[in-house]
Length: 130
Image (cartoon, rainbow, N blue to C red; front, side, top):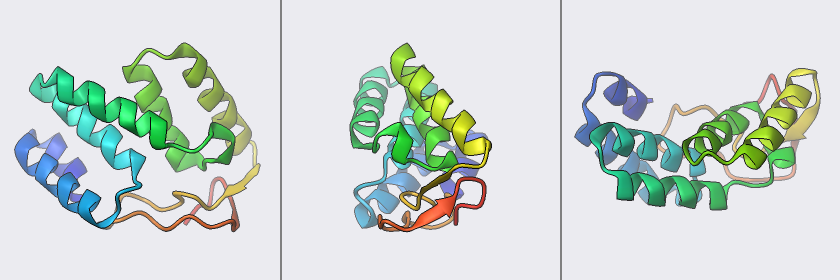
């Protein structure tokens, strides 16, 4: 993902711009908000960070309905806000997922395009979400 690359290169303003463009296309994309909150944190913009991470947590589906990739983003958000209960739930679901459980296809893509896949009820393997 372009925004991840820009973040790694400390091109924070460019990364924010890339995420904002993606969010214009896909409004229901909590992982984008988590990434943007991480970037705001690196920039020292704590009010923006706090808003984005809380918005992301509110937009995520319940941990038991997320795939491995989405759980990773939820775990990152839970750590940022120091929500131990959410962190424990997400980690428990991640363990189940890695043990071979099937998960809904929701948010099953990778951060490779401008938008995340649409939600549907298709079941996919946690390890092979696509």
